[in-house]
Length: 404
Image 1: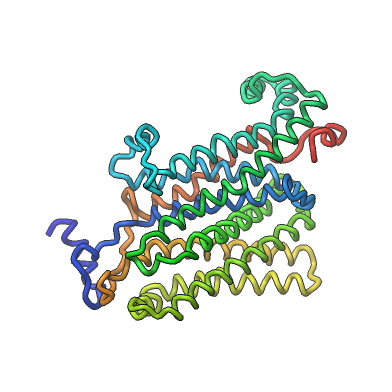
Image 2 (image 1 turned 30 degrees about the horizontal axis):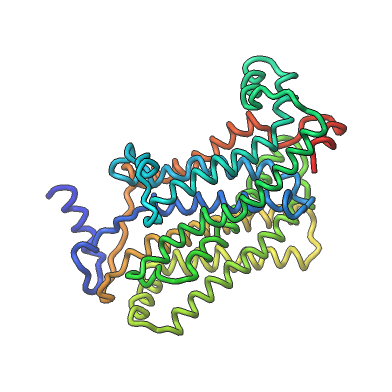
């Protein structure tokens, strides 16, 4: 028996009810789970950064640059799961040469290019322009020339140029907020527009994807801040941490409310698919949806943050509780992506049977590849932090000249 037949034979052992032959195998693998998870982290991190420039939230000023660099690191890796999933990734550039404006998936290339080239890179450049000039005058080779080239050999550090940078930064951030919404909202739009699949066909799917992205991005920045700051030998700013936790709390509440609204709406409609969807949740997705996504990823973190807000706890205990909360939230958001992508392929269009997903360990679309894609942005972030320090290194007098 060849490997393909062996795989189908193993899958058939877990099939229940009646299912069409072409629905036995799940075609969108874990790579398509990783893809919306990574893009969600990008959107959430950028939204947190926008709180500083647009809404003037001073408490999170210290994580502004870290948020921008985190968004860039994950955005650079975000298309890789899709490219690895394609049969001919070397032909992906053709979407720019012959654009198909009626294809939501094809238009992602333009959304991605807009967000990367116009929004994120420009905001980072104007944020660091003055710093790059100063660093290039103080450093030696090779960082001296790296920062010179990144500053485009600019030498203007006058007050007028700094004022101009601030104005441009605010304008870019204002444009960037709807762009971040579009970047991740379109992922939910793709799933929500597939009317033939009742698990995905909901007008709330794009909004749920968007708010879960904000939740995951804020949680990621909190996690990175709590890890990197002690590694640098500095104390964590509890005002900043508490403020980020407050925004995370509100975002989780909205996300949880939207998901419950979507669930109640499905129950109220009680279409012909409600029975098979109920079997899907209780049999195939019970652990990933009920236990991991809802209980561990939402209810417990919400309870922890509420307890922190109501009780006057010591700083060290608050740090520990925040740390546990953001890890659980990341686990819950990844489970959300898993339940949407994998869960939507596990029931038959006949509404009379369920299949299963047998994830490979190795291979192009296996577990190890997914883990590499999840870890790779952290290495990119480490490189970016080496080139663009996220913490001010100038003297206090200089900082006043470049900060908001």
